[in-house]
Length: 90
Image 1: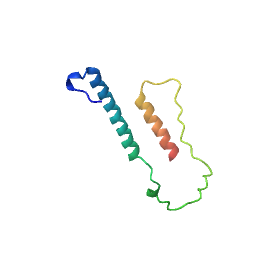
Image 2 (image 1 turned 135 degrees about the vertical axis):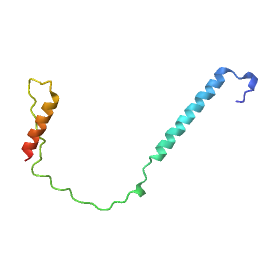
Image 3 (image 1 turned 30 degrees about the vertical axis):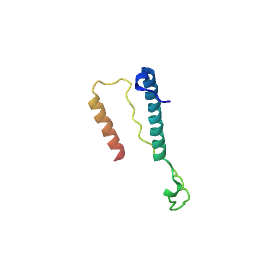
Image 4 (image 1 turned 90 degrees about the vertical axis):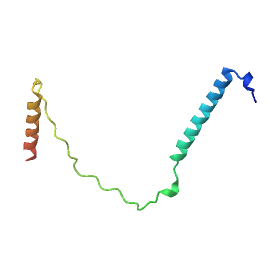
């Protein structure tokens, strides 16, 4: 549907703008999907191995007890906590 420049209205321009925006959005979606498309020939299976046996005992992280009455001296608390942790390791 061809329009003369004299007979074009603002709504025609806006409709064309919206159609072009939709088209560009669709092309961007297509390009993104095409870029991430999986191609089965690009991955080569080197070997298939049996799963390893689980460890007997899992190690737990140390649990630090926080005093119920909190001190305003945070630095002293952190230093004390670190020294207790180092004593447990030694």
